[in-house]
Image (tube, rainbow over all chains, first blue to last red; front, side, top):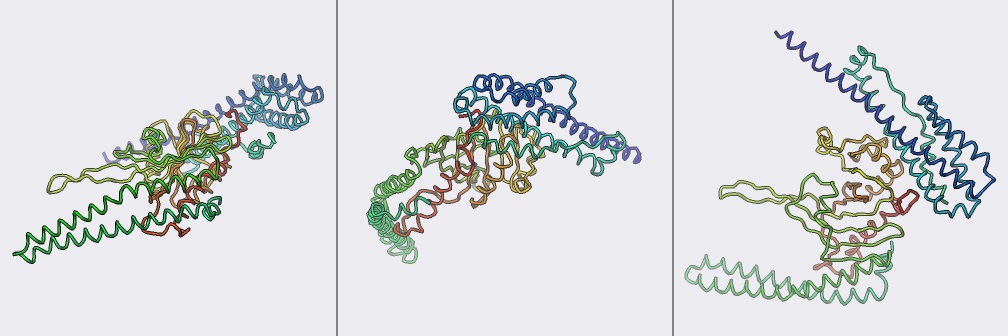
Amino acid sequence: MIVAIILCVIILIAILLYNSIVGKKNQIDNAFAAIDVMLKKRFELVPNLIEIVKQYTNYEQTTLTKIVELRTKAAANNLTDGNRNQIDQELGAQVKSLMVNIENYPDLKANSSYLNLQRTWTESEEQIAAARRSFNAAVTNYNDAIMMFPGSIIAGIFSFQKSTLLSNTEEERKSLNAKDLFQ
Amino acid sequence: MHSENFLNTPAIQNVLAEMEITRKEIAKKQIISTVLAVIGILIGFGGYFFQSAMVYFIAIGVSIFIASLIVYTSTTAKDENYRKNFKEKIIAQVLKLYDESVTIRFSIGLAEREFKDTQLFAQDPDRYHSEDLVTGKLDKTSFYFGEVHAEYKTEVRTKNGSTTRWHDIFKGIIFTADFNKHFTGGTIVRPRNMFSGMSTWFSFGSAKPVELENVNFQKTFITQSSDQVEARYLLTPALMERILLLDEKSEETISLSFCNSKVYIAFPIYRNCFEPPKFKSLLNPKILEADLNVIDAMMAIIHELDLNTRIWTKD
C-alpha cells in the first residue's frame, strides 16, 4: 500500500514537471512568434520608405536597391529562422545607413511622411529588441527547468533539448541609440 | 537647484520676514492655549484632593479650559491664512522657477479613482485624502503630482464592542507623466520584499511576473505585466538604469506603473509636505530645505527618465 502511494506521488510529480517543461517550451514558441510578427511589421514599412526616399533623391540608388532585395528575400516563405534574423539585421543596418545619409537632404528630412516613417521604424526596432529579450527570458527559463534537478531527469527521459539564446546584443545596443538618427 | 537662490532674493526674504511675524503670533497663542488647557485640566482634577471645594475647582478648571479653546480658535483663521500665504507666495513661486506652466492647487489632489487606476496598491482605500496638486508641462511632457494619504481600516474586537484601527496603504507623493511611447497593457514595478515576492507566485490574473536582465533592477523591484514584450519595450535597459538612479534618491523604494498611456511613480514620504513650520523659524533655510528638495526631485523626473525624447510615434 505504502509503495503504491509513493509510486502515485512520484508519477504525479513527474506529470507536473513534464507539464511545466512543456509549458515553458511553448512560451519559447510564443516568444518566437512575437519576434516574427514584429519583423513582418518592420518589413512592411520598407516599400513606403523606398517610395518616399525615391521622390527626393536619385543618389541613394545602390542602398535602395539593396534594401529592396533584402525586403524581397525576407518576404520569401522558404526562409529558415536563422536566415530571417540575418536578413533583418542586414536590412536594419542598410536602413540606418540610409537614414543617416538622408541628413543631407533637408527637404526629405522635413517631409512629415518621412518623419512619421522614421518614428515608426525606430519604434519597430525597439519592439523587435523587446521581443528578442522576451524570447531570451523564455529560453533561460526553459533551459533552467531542463538542466536543474529534478527537471533534468524528466528532460533526459523525454529528450528535451537545450534551446539557444539569440545573441544579437550588438544589434540591440544599436537600436538603443536610435535617438542618434534624429539629431 | 533653482530654489536655493530664489530663497535668498530680497523680495522673498521680505515675504518670509512678514510671514515670520504672523508665525510667531500664531505659535505664541497656541502655546498659551496649550498651557491654559493643561492648567485647566490640572485644576479640575485637583478638586479630587479637596473634596469640600471640589465644585469650585471644577468650575475654575472648566473655565480655564474654555478660555484655552477660545484662544486656540482665535488662531485658526490666521493659521489658515498663514498656510495659504506660504503655499501661494513660496511654494507656488518656487514651482514657477521651473516653468511658467507649473501651478499648484492646494485643496485639490489626485482623484481616488486615479489612485486605484494606478494598480500600484493591492487594497482599495477606506479613507482617502489628497491635496497640493501640482500640474504643468515641461517641454513636451505633461505631468502632475500630489500628496496622497490612503488608508484601510480593520475592526478589532474589544471587551466593550469593537474598535476601528486605521492602517496606511500609502502616504507620500504620486507623480504622473504622459509616457513617451504608446502601449496598451499594464506594467507594474513594485519594491521587492517577501510579500511582493510571494504575491507573484499566485498571480492568477492577466499580470504575469517579468524577469528582466538587469540584476540590480531585479534585486530592487518585482515587475508584473499583462504583456511580456510590451513590458520590455517600456523597460528598456536604459530606462531600468534611470529608474534605479531615481530610486537611489528616494528615502524609501519607489513603485511605478505604466497604464492609461501614463507612467505613475509613487514616492513614500511619511511627513506632510508643503506645510509651513509653526514652531520653528521660517527664516532658517534648513526648515524649507526638505520641501524644496521634494520639488526639485519631482521636477527632475522628466529629464531623468528622458520623457521628453519623442522619437517614437507618440508626439
